[in-house]
Amino acid sequence: MEAKKVEFLKLIDRALEVGKTMLDTGYPSSDRLNNLIDQLQQIKAETISDRLEPSGGTVTLGLAREVADWIENLDSPLLKAVSAIEIYYQQQL
Image 1 (cartoon, rainbow, N blue to C red):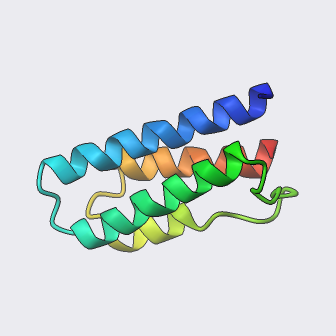
Image 2 (image 1 turned 30 degrees about the vertical axis):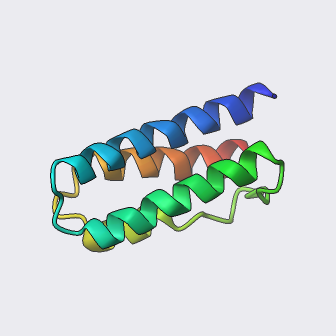
């Protein structure tokens, strides 16, 4: 697997880890958090199977905007993790 994909998958795994930790601690927006985790797992599967469309520097995954809509703290580790995914996707894939 090429290095860019490996790095992208690491970013996704980090966001999944943060999200699952939030679920384990009883985060109040668990429905939205579960939805995000599902989206991240789908993006991961599409990346592994080479089905994720390239960004071309313009397309986003919509993750950061979605999380920003419901996250209580805009300095949250989860928002930072999904933002890193978005930035990498736009710049590298």
